Image (tube, rainbow over all chains, first blue to last red; front, side):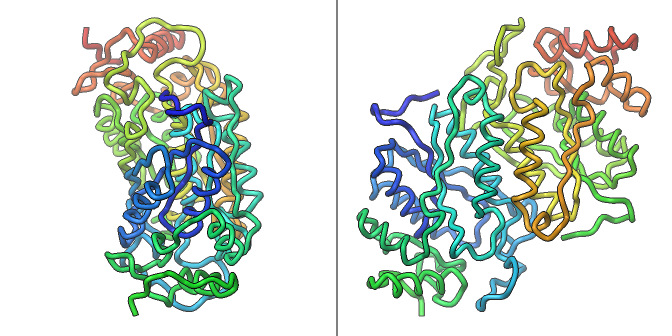
Length: 230
Length: 230
């Protein structure tokens, strides 16, 4: 309903406060979109990444940043939202317990609603099929199916304004993502990737997310600006 | 994650408290499913239909009933969630202002997450393409696309437990829905369809939803048990 404040086309960017979504926001801005960042308070164990999202939206120059309350812990079933389940510190085969049932589907559905309200025809999400940790809803075939469904779901689509779902990180390794964001000027010290970061955003250095991130900086040949708690 | 309490297969039923979803719950139970009803507090103008949903789940014999907080009014854009927009009392061509952006997509996404948590392979929703009031996310092609996406989205689907999306009302007129539910023993006096019902659930008798409902009872040749405010 609200037009973008500039002549640039509006886009909705899912912004978690992590490394990947910060890079996606920078990519959308570099492509000339008026970026409306959207974050979710979905019952995460820690709020440090939501604080990071707010700072990133400002630092990178998003047009707006909205935080939506979306308490997935009401449904239970994941170590990321259920305080009774332990976060694993060593990788295991298969889909990890940190998987949140249908998380990307729920978040993309909200992004779809918000895009329609904002008059945006583009949604950006930082899914990645290379270092994807085994999540089914990060795969290219899933993204294609969501976009197809979205184009049948909304008043905007019915009226001839199609929805495009952008996944600029889809085929990049963590090191390539970091190199890409580095060239776009992303300050990765503002991002929080750790599954069990402290209140102030310091990383544990041991969980799956920390391990992937640390290896990414090393492989990219860049200094790791992450604040580690240990 | 939690198995159904009986040997019956578990299903998630979207239950708004209206006439259609009450009929769908009765249909799922008649088919032998252990029915887990799911309702949303999505910032509706009135709460009467949520009270109705609770009573219907009990009266019809659902295994459980969960109410999820899902505040779509955070996004704005619909007369059903935005108190500043007027609800129309006469039908207009095209998609009505009571359309909530991506509502079914958001609710089905939550149902998908909840089905995975419950170990349910079936979701029931009361969409209807005949008297569908012009909503794009009630059409058969939308439902097919959502089911396809859902079967790429979850750990359950990846592991060989597919998701089936049931729409038992899809091709029924309002009168046929009422006849169907009547034969299944649904007490429609417990349901609330009105867009602007009073706190106690009395209907305005004038909005689109009231008009369709009243005509439905008349065409079905059944007494209309609706409590009207006027």
